[in-house]
Length: 380
Image (cartoon, rainbow, N blue to C red; front, side, top):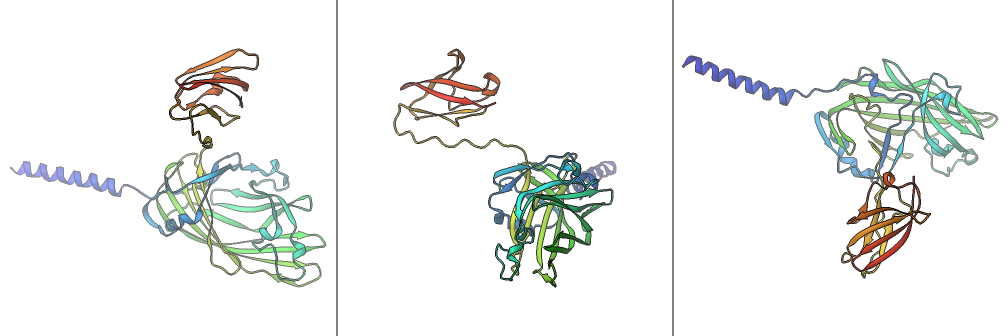
C-alpha cells in the first residue's frame, strides 16, 4: 500500500511539474546584434491603413504578453526597405556606414517637424526642397546606432555626420532594461544658415511575449523609446532661432529568431508643435501579397463577360452573370494559333504565367448564353 501511495504521489508531482514547466517554460528572449538589420537586407513592410486603431496595444506591457494582431493589421500599401552600404549611395563619403532611404523628397520644414508656413519673419525662405534622404547606421556587439544622415540639398548630396550618435539599441537587450542617451548633429548651408539638432533618447524594454501578425508568430521583446528633439537655426549674421522641442515615441517589437532582423512591428507617435504625441504611422513586417482584383462591372443580364484585370499577370478573373456558367475558355496567340484550352474554369484561371508566353491573346469564352470573344494582354 505504501509503495502504491508513493507511486501515486510521484506521478502527481511529475504531472504538476510538467504542467508548471509548460506554464512557466516561456522565458523572455535576450537579444544581441542579430536582431538589427544588416547591409544587404531587403525586408518588406506594410503600412497600416488606420494607424490610430492600434492605440490599444500601447498599454499592453509587462511579461508574457500575447499581442494577437493578425486581423487588426490591415494595409493597402507595402514597400521594400533596402539596407545598402554607404558606397552604394550618393553619400559614399560616409564609408563604414550602411543605411536606407527614408524618402525620395521632402522639405526642410518637414525635416524639422514644422508646418509649411511659419509666422517667423525671414524663415519661410528657408523651406528648401530636399531629395534622397537617407539614415545611416553602425552596428557592433554593444549597440546599434544611427551615426549619419544623407540629404540632397540645392542639387548636391550632403553627408551629415552625427557628432553624438543616436544609440537606438544596446546589447545584450533584455526585459526591464532602461537606457538614456543623447544625440546631436549640425547641417551647414553655406552663406545661408546652419541647422543644429540636439536630442535625448530614453528607452525601456517594457514587455515581452508572443506577437502574431499577418507575417507570422514570433517571440518578441518590446522596446519603447521616447525622443525629445530640439532644433535651432542660425541665419547668416544673426543669433540662433530656437524651434519648439518636439517629441517622438517609437514602440518596436524585435525577435531573436533567425533571419528576422529589424522590427517586426513599429508604432510611431509624433507631437506637432505643443500638442501631445499621437499615433501617426504603423509599419509591420510582411511578405508580398498580390493586390485583389477590382470587382467586375455589374452584369444585370446574361449575355456578357468581363475579363479582368486586363492587362493581367498570372491570374485572369472571369466576370459572368450568375446564371451564365462558363464551360470552356480558349486562347489564341497573335499568329492565330490556338495555344490553350481550359475546361470548366469557374470564375478564375490561375498559373497563366506558366502556360503562356507574355503577349496579346484573343480569348473565346463559351458559356450557357453564348460565345464571347475578348482580347487581353498577359504581362511577364
